[in-house]
Each structure stands twice: as structure tokens, then as C-alpha cells.
Length: 611
Image (cartoon, rainbow, N blue to C red; front, side, top):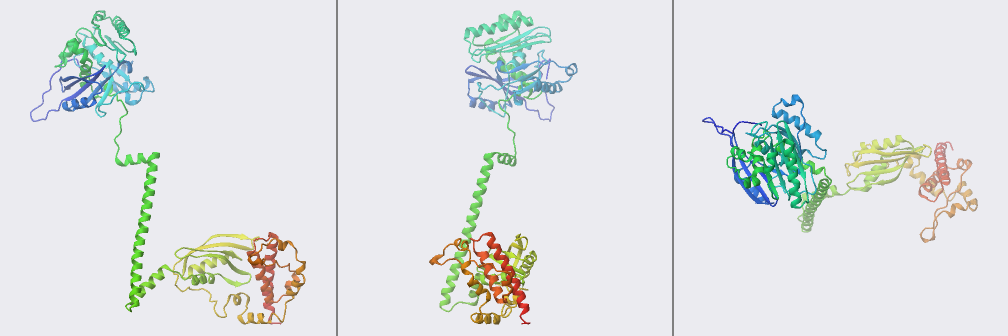
């Protein structure tokens, strides 16, 4: 980066394409004007343009940059706004080349600069310029200030540095050799900033002094005082006479302006030109010979650079935010509703067309033109859309095991709708009966996917409440391997051995042979407890609920016939299930008596042949 030789032009060999020169622009804000200097360098430095534009004319600056094909725009921040330090380096680091030294300085910048300086506002590097005795390691930091607002011109090409950096270049140009002191200072009353730099051998003195709100006289006095103090410190008292007057002025040591015009053809050495474009020209001179290519000391950014991401990365990042996630949910819900409504509309259109076809077929059938294919189409549609509910209920009940009075299943409710699954809820004397019920359903060929959804032991584990769910696969199919309850194979015959003839005989003989239970019941009816009647509510028409039967003794149950025992069993079991006003004690009594009556009915059936 550092060079002490005069600039030379680089020639290219015949047949090889010359590398296009690099072009750098520098913008220095001076009050209401922007001073812009554009230069190019490819072995030699040449000034292309030096123009003044109205402040905040960003479009004019961009047009100027595009016209000259500028690669990098370096803007100067006031000296008082940027922290610039010359760190002490270890002896072994000073022997390294500029690139390796820049890496060491970057680490020092992270540790020595304040923590509130973000990474995109930090810089480090070795400052040098051709023809100048300058090799200065620097670290710079630009803290964010809420009260200062800068206008971004071109985020892709725009970089920043401090006014102290070009001041150090101009101070080095004033030195005729390494042992001669060099000074440079710049003061701007409108920005309220003073920057001073002094070099003398290995000693470097630089300061950025803020002077906001000071009047012109006070500002000029303080600026001259700071410059005089610097000259005394580096031993350059003769440069004090070079301090000019004005609202914003550049003070240079002897020979700086002439050296600048020699190193950059096109630059002028007059005081007025240097006052306007001197800092910008020195920035271009150093920026063109910066080894980092516009980075390092000239790489500060106004805002954190945006990382270019793929469309997928941007989408995922957007979904990670609350707003993006809510937007995705709303879009998903809208698409779901649209698809649902669209499917419903399409189904309605198809059904309307089919209905129109059926109506047309029926109308045609009135004139005798209905074909067999039309009738089959109607039957197929009915077969698809309607279920034989009575048949399916019969198949469900037929699949329930019914062996003996002590091995029964009772269905409390059956839920069955066309096109949906069925649910059977009830009680059984054992879990094995429920498993047999499920197996019979799955093997019937009418139902499938039957399974026990819930079961629970009740009554001290005597019975099991169950809930079985399944699907209907062939509603019109003939069930396989299910018991036949037609004719003499009724449920009563299978469980209790009672045939239709026995039931008819029992009914005809009932008036001639009243049961002893009926007599006892009529005799003791008046003695029944009053609370058993007060708990029931009145039904429509003034008819009260069925009376709760009296308690039966074991002797009374033992004296019953088979028909009497079955009648008492059915009555007590029905009341225990249908009456909601019963106390738990009465309900349990009825269940216990029902079980005893059922056992008596079985016993009486066995005694019938002998009697």
C-alpha cells in the first residue's frame, strides 16, 4: 500500500488486454455544497473531475458517478464524529506486510473501540500514499448519533471515512523528508468540527474537536488555538502563519498543495481550489492506492449491508416472523375454504346433472321408453346412496352372543347413519362376550373394522359396560356365520328354552292360575313406603310412573314358576334402567332381585320335565 516512488504508468504487452483503470470518487460536505473529486489509477493517478453540487442532490451525484464509471464513492464524515487512533503494535507485528498488519489492526479495533460501535462502522489498516513519507497504522470507529442524519446516495458503492484520514495524507505531503514535521488542519463552523493532524518522525498527533453551536468568532478563535497547540507539539511553528480565516478552511504546511498537484495531474495548488477540493483529492489519492480495494480505513458504511439471499431463504425468514406466519395461515385457510367450496360446487353440478338425467328417464318411462339399463342405473344409485337400516340393525343384534341367562349382552343404544360408522353401547356379563361380538361383526361380511373403543367394569366387576365402533362395508350383503333367530330359534328359546307355544299357553292360563307373587303383591300394596311414590314425576294426562315393586324374599322367589320369574326379572331390570329418580339403594335392590329371578327361571326350566 505504501510507496515512496514517483507515479509511473504501467504498459501492457502486445496481444494482452489491458486491465481497466480503477476509478474512485470522494465526496466532502462543506456547508450547503458537496465537493466531489473523481480520479482513476492504474499505476498512475489522474484527476478526472472536480465539481460542486448542491447539498442533498443525491440524483446529481449518482448521474455524475455513472457518467464517469466510478467503482467506489468515499464520503468524508466530520473529524469530530469519528474515533481515530494510532495503536501501539508489538515489535513482531511491525515487521509484517501491510495485509497481515491490517488483520492485526482489525482485531485491535474490536477490542479498543467502544462496544457501541457496530462492525459495519469499524475500520483498520495502514495508511499510505505515493510520494509521501507515510506508513501509519490506524483504527477508526464511527459511533451512531441520533441527532446526525446523513443522506444515503448509493448503498452499493458508498463507503465512508474520517476527515482525519486525508488530513494525515496532506500532512505527510508537506514533509520534505522523514525528519521534517508536517501539519494539516480543517475547520468547519457549520458542522461544528475541527480536525488537526501533526507528524514528526515516528510521532503522530491527531485530534477531532467538536464545537457545536459556537458563533463564528468563538469558533475561529478555538480552531486557531488548537492549531497553534498542535504546531508547538510537533515543532512546526512556522506553519502557524498558514492558518486562514473563514467559516470552513483548510490549513496546510508548506509544500502540501504543490505535492498534491504533482502526484495527481489535474489538481490545482491554488488556496481556493485546495480549500474546496483538497480533502476530497487526498482521499482519492489514498483510496486508489489502498490495498484493501475500498475497504479497511475507507470501508465504513452508513447502515449494515443487506445480505443477498435466495428466494427460499427469504421465504423462510419471512415465515419466521409473526406477520409472515399469520399471512401464511390466512392464505392456507383461504385456499382450504376455496378448495372445499369448489369441491362442493363440483359435486352439486354433478348431482344436478344426474338428477336431470333421472327425471328425464322417468318422464321417458311414462311413454314406455325406459330401458333396462336406465332401471339398473337408478337401482345402482339407490344402492349407493341408501342403506337398509332395519336389516343392518338386525345384523348388529344377531351378532351379539346369546347363550344362557348368565351369559348375555344388552344394547343400550345403537348409532347408525348412512355413509358413517356405527357405534353400539351396552352391557355384557363378561369381556369375552364383547370380544366374540367384535369377531362376529368382522366375520359377517357386512361390517368391518369393528373394535372395542371403551369398556369398563360396573357393579363390583359383575358386568362390563362397553362401546364398540365399526364401519359398514356391504350394507346389502347377506351376513355370514350369524345365528338364525327365525321360526323356533328365537332369543327366548335359545336362552331360556321358551317356545312360542309355551308363551301362548302361559298367556291363556294366566287368568285361571294367578301367581302367588301377584297375591302377595296385592295384599301388601298398601304397605309400600311412601317415598317410593313421591320421587316420580307426573306424565302427560295425569298418569304417574310405574310403581316401584316391593322387595322379594328368597322364599317368594323360590316359589315362582319359570314364567313368573322371567316376568319379575324383566320388570325389575327395565325399571332399574329407565327410571332416573331411583336412589342408588333401590336401583341396586332391583338389580339384585332381577338376577335372583333369572336364576330361578333357569332352575324352574330344569324342574319342568320332572313335574
